[in-house]
Length: 412
Image 1 (cartoon, one colour):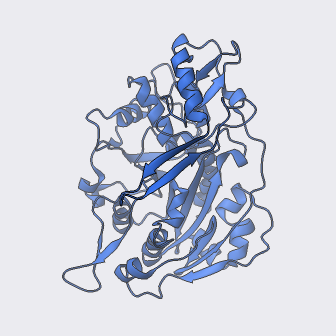
Image 2: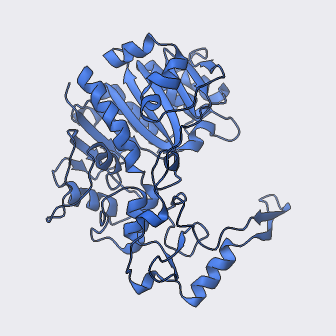
Image 3: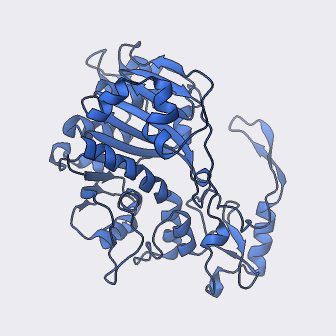
């Protein structure tokens, strides 16, 4: 079986950087790929911007003509190249479905929700393996029906003959330079050798030592029995959308429509720190002006603010104090798309050479996500470089998963 891959919602190429262990850019501005995953197609399209900065960056770094800058909903799924692995990070949205007007058993996914585009590709192309990333709140959304959205996803994959493993991973707990917590989802078709091996295992063994996450991101011995949920007890997806709720934990396994979930604790590794990734001799414009320093002091301080709910009820909004700057001996906090702006979430560091307060540089943000230096220096405005890294993933996690995925594919 070959290692062909498609990358959906590709952004600036985090999955490709991770899977192919890309560490540098050559003199022509193209990525130096060190792995044997062959990316046969990628799709990146941002509906809210005229200039497609993420796609332009992806195209510049890879330049192989196998990329698409088209609304994924308009792509004919059968025309996507055949592939062994589908990967992508997709937005967390409301995945609710409704009864069709024509039949009680029909379903209609909420328009604009990108999960349904993934499902349509799985139907059309039947890839043996799938690797997805999302924010960890996916497990608990929506707030009024906890677990429904993830349950819908799992049911869809069960109906298509997939087995699913998942884990919420805090990158810093496994040696990486950012405290970024995300859910990673790996799925395989039941008819693969890997799928058949999972079906013969006890779920607790999958979750504790034999599954892809347990092997690549070890956990402490599990003492509690997993809770389970039969996703096929409810006849169809529309009824599931109305009725389903379940307390999914940070680790889980689903086979033949039965989901098993348990809370796991990581075997922690020493992380890289902000001090490890800091540049020296940075441009003056990254340093805080007196006015900015005052703004950040106010934003990072404790506060209580009177606000009003939509129904007119007053309430007191409070925030605790943050350290005036980010400690150099700790990994970075989770980067947001507002990084680099005057915002409470923006990292502030003491420059290692001058001891003056400043924001992170775009290169330092790339290092927090383990991209090569200058990856987003592709003609986009600096503000967009920060935005891209706020949207990206820690590519080191994908590299580690890629090691095992490569073995699994070879064993097929």
